[in-house]
Image (cartoon, rainbow, N blue to C red; front, side):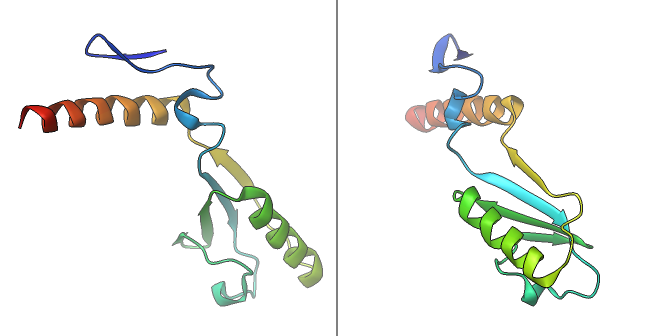
Length: 107
């Protein structure tokens, strides 16, 4: 349960709190040598140096496309990682939303 200003902002198990179990995921990996970003089967959301990040609601579809492509091209997706929002991310979002909506009501 997350409380903000004495009110319940959200409740649930740690894995489902704030939609953690169904929200966006960030898929990240290091670009394979000799491969251009345009060659990837999906469009990255962010590119920092050789590190690629793809934000998606459809993690199975995106992971399937990425892994099939990598296997066909015989390239490695070094450091492949799939991450959901942390509990801290959810807490900060929920408390910020509660504070923002309360400020809008009083404006």
